[in-house]
Image 1 (tube, rainbow, N blue to C red):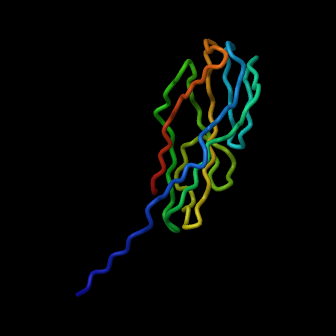
Image 2 (tube, helix red, strand yellow; image 1 turned 180 degrees about the vertical axis):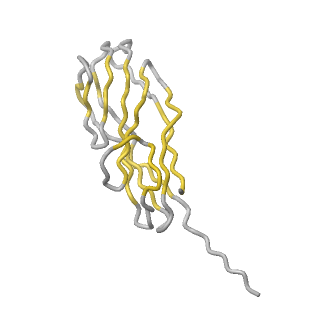
Image 3 (tube, rainbow, N blue to C red; image 1 turned 30 degrees about the horizontal axis):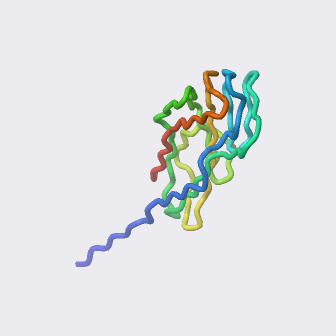
Length: 142
């Protein structure tokens, strides 16, 4: 008697870049949104001023058959900036909330996950200061 067992490919995540809003107006309370395409907008009187803008970008490599579940949580404020409402675009799909079930298997060539988010700014930030709010992205086989 021979027993056969096969093992699938583990997930490999490679972060290409973190989210960057660039420089926005100091001392203005507002909510800024960065889209999965890297565009920054303000909900009110806030203003994007300069610097590099970038959505989060992760390359996912793994199974050719197992689907993925993608979620976001553990939002953590920093310097009066609170992140919320993460959006995801996986494998070229339209942006939607980062609660994705049964996403297409990434395969050995990999697929890209782009991440956008809202950042609520309380207006207490001084010129030249930097905030580093964070959150957790979880990606597991479905």
